[in-house]
Image (cartoon, rainbow, N blue to C red):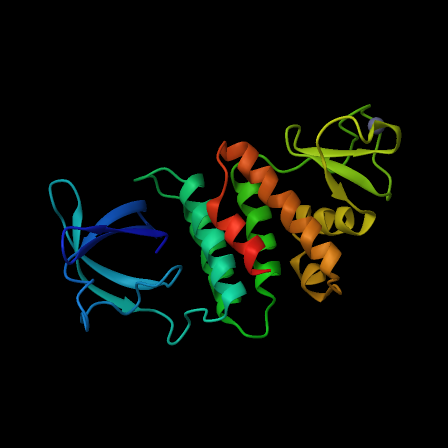
Length: 237
Ligand SMILES: [Zn+2]
């Protein structure tokens, strides 16, 4: 489930990402009443098997059967990360178009978010990078956005407006985010899909903050809208 809004007295409209039909809206009747029997499995990013009754404008939810048991992320940072991810995916995909790769990215991320052993902010960063790749706007990590020269392993800056990094004398000209040599290294590991190395890295608070700021700003620029949930995450942190 990506998003929900109230509808009438007791109903909700849920926006969900399905494996086969992409993003769809579903009418969930009665879920706002206490003890609604079909409430389980409708949490943010929860994966469920849905039984739907086709309708003229929108399908109606008949039943939702959770695919994972007790997987709802409880802790604040995990919830905030799930919120950012849901908002990113919601902004990335159009309704009614199958997006198997995005579904896969989201399923993997929600499993990581549900695992107490996994760092939720790393799960968010990996998913954000994968979404950029899936959308065809992977950040440029090879040449300087200012002069075109090959990037070294140095501290630099990330320019969301250009989707890449500047270093050395090209720094400090336009609004940019810090991109340390360590952050650039992680981004490069992500770009070659080396998640095994990435999850083994020692995460410093600076590295996490930089990476998260860069990836969210990069996606916000491409999706052309600010992520409300990213502000919530910043506050929770
Ligand atoms: Zn340069």
